[in-house]
Image (cartoon, rainbow, N blue to C red; front, side):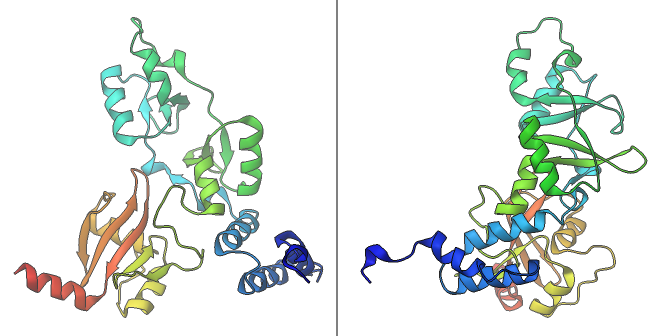
Length: 282
């Protein structure tokens, strides 16, 4: 058989799928088998796994919590709104009426360019309607609704009607394709702790404390926080900035990726490297 007659990717994948998996676990086994036989790369496998997982993931699992929402009060003057928007660097902001449970609408950052020329400024005139969704909504359903309505943000409410947080289309897509525009993304969704070429470890902030302790032989408590990101946030008492360094329990954590809403990726020095660095500093 010459090279021109070799089956392509679709044909090879189809031949595997003809095994007719009986459930999702068998389907994933087939996909992993395809990856191991070089019929698809790690990125393709991760995206397919993410798309399958989206059907079982609720909005509450990925939303920005209420306390971390960047909001604008409808009565704030323009000269206070503009610095807030510039510092947060988001494209959309919920606008409240004195209380985070009282969301009046959504302000698009680009509209501020036109507001600069307004003599009689009234923020209410520039608000877009806010979309409210329940915490229990599944990500695949929400993504379909985002595409149909062309909205990019939704406000998440709890069973009592109070605001629980917000979710954006980027938050949903990142669950499928991984962190968007992040040069430190990992190839495998399950690979939360990975050795770097420098000898340090890239660690996803959502890595559970139990797994982190097992990997680094540490004894951090999981009573107050469940993840490594929670550990760092608790230690600092705030969201860290990119490249910020903090020492906790004999380990040195460097922030590889974070924004004004969430911590994503950390670079962790093994214990002996942290001690060596301290010795050199002295």
